[in-house]
Image (spheres, rainbow, N blue to C red):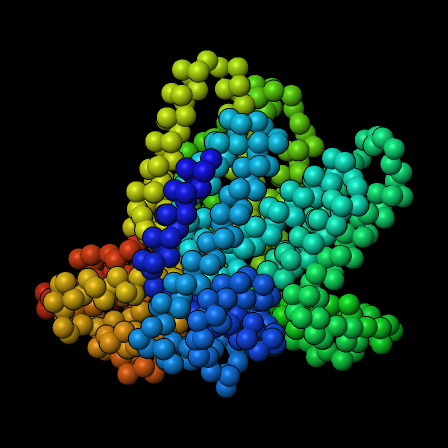
Length: 560
């Protein structure tokens, strides 16, 4: 176990120190530093503060200077401009602290799997976890995505522990973890209905010796109450008990709720004000239209099968095969007694998260459903219970093959963010299926700079999908022409190659909008190299452009 955790730590550590600041990561760290240093939480309310405050501890202890004149996501850009020489050092420290979340989650996953399915199942589950490219990629970044996995796993594990033998201490434990979860990511609100559902699954029809159902209900209420207190502490107990009538909401759901509850709008709300405003802002953003790409198609409303396809393309095949085998072995009784309650406890969160996210329009990456992956891993690891009665030789041979196939998932290290399995075509072919944070999140800018220097590209044009200007790294460039190619050298992010609209930093540090398919013409050319799976390099000659012009004229000429 310790060797697997150590290997996971080393892979995450090297990835964290190899990659540039990703798109959303830019502001999480300096906002966390201001949350911690100023003890105020209205600087950027789109995400709760716990995980980024934790990552910002090295900045506060190290005395990093952070401007207090900017609010919102602009805090990140200002921080980079104020620290042009050492900003990556601060992000490296933040990422290093953030590794705590993935290591803690790996340990919990192992413990949960061992309680349910024994040592063989636990080791198989842990091996799947520590070699999963998606978990390594996001475990190396300062975003709330990996902490949200810890929040889900720890709360659900502690709650099932309480369901086995309800007592007050266990109720307090899951209550604390539920409160911390709410302070990590708004997605963790789903834990509240999940706990009700799991309580029904685990406790319905059971006789608990010496315990009355009134006591069970009281413990459940105490756990929920403690979670509110802990959530309040995550926001420094600021803005508690503000009446509902004093809020001005932007999200239609909260506006409707406010109208429905108008008769009791004078009553105080037992949640921090910035937490409520953050939910409102999150719902407002998610209700908007976003360009979503799936299997060569674009949509502004999203796709009902987006996240199912994301799991199909982004998870290693060995994980998928073990998951299928676990269901077969469970149904046929090969893996021992059928533990329906435990399996339902693992599947209920998976089903709810997939159901909710599939109906949203904000479908920008597998990272939105990361908490379901370890739960599926526990189920996949359960298939190894068939080895409990096998010989030592069979166990060793099977374990060796599992290590080998899991290790193959790491062959693209450290480019884990752009990982796609073989069915999806790998990091190069994956762009035909998914974009955005599944592939290109601005993570390879430093690697691009290094490769351009090695190639002696002094003059080039660049379209970089990122949230800060490459000019800060001393990169001198101009932007590619719109709609029509010209001869020259180019570095273009895959999101732009595939036609995604966004905001582009120009060579002088200013920004401008990029239209849909503005740089899509690059798909007609073969890149000379792809950097980290996310940035294509092109060298277009006069002949290349002439052939493109000819094909366009032929395609657009009227049919006679």
